[in-house]
Amino acid sequence: MSFEYIKNKFPTDDGFCMPAEFSKHSATVMIWPERPGSWCYEAKFAEKVFAEIIGKIAEFEKVFVLASDKKFAHAKACLVCVKNAEVLNINSDDAWARDTAPTFVVNNNGEIRAIDWQFNAWGGEYDGLYANWENDDKIPYELCKTLGVPLYDAHPFVLEGGSIHTDGEGTLITTEECLLSKGRNPQLTKAEIEEKLNKYLGINKTIWLPKGIYNDETNGHIDNICAFVAPAEVVLAWCDDENDPQYAISKACLDILENSTDNKGRKIKVHKLPVPKIPVTVTENDIKGYIFEDGEDTREVGERLAASYVNFYFCNGAVILPQFGGENAESDRVAAEILERVCKDRKIIPIYARDIIVGGGNIHCITQQIPFADKGGKI
Image (cartoon, rainbow, N blue to C red; front, side, top):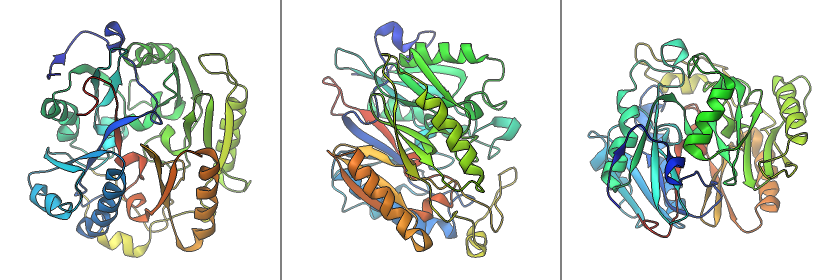
């Protein structure tokens, strides 16, 4: 396997498609946290939880950790005892590997390739979260060149990995709030976006949910509200409180899912995964730790964060599950118990992740899987 930047061609032309996240991986990609507008107090708390997550995932599969010129030596020192982690010197603008690392695809011959979507910081000049995303947009090229993985150029189609979930059998779920937002691909119709998903990922059936988690600054990424756990089976972020704005969103999503079939004509089985009972908000202490750049989205005390247990990550044999602690200790326990029942063949690994959600996302947002394939499966 050697690096090639493939232009004017789609992965499906060569027999490649996107497998499900719950299928076998060869590795996980993460990015060492650094951006002061995302990670409070020079990222010292974020670094601890990132290192913990890297260590847990590394028990099950290899982890590639991207680190900037400035943080490369520091990241290596922090992870020196993690035997199955490799730090790569690749610059970024933030640590959201789900959205900035490439999407990997496989074929029936056991080969891996990847897709280089255009990244514009979740909305570009319309409503993007920071002004300069040049390094983030280069990550797929730099990573695939380093790993020797052929890469399809999908520019100028804007897509983030957190905006899609697939079952690996031709069905994809997403939200209208995100993929139809004016900051992504406003020149394309819904049908034209579906055609792009078909040609790049091998998707024959797209299920559109209306919105994501309430107040999600990514314009409602699907990975915060709904995720495939098996073919024709999903978990859905659920809220029972009719006075909570999340209630109407969750109910609308449930109605669509219960009246949908997948690419193979199967009805969708839905497991309700309650959101934290007490909304997670930005505190005065958090605010003191941020340093925002010009043109960057800022935060305020009391701002509700898009906390959701659906933002977990599948790795080989395990589920890495966010926990919020404090007043939500009971919600944390309930979420873990539900996923233990739903994912019977996996170990549930709870991680206190409030120091990630204050950056705007959670465990799924900071991870990106490299699927396993017979040839090149061990990257």
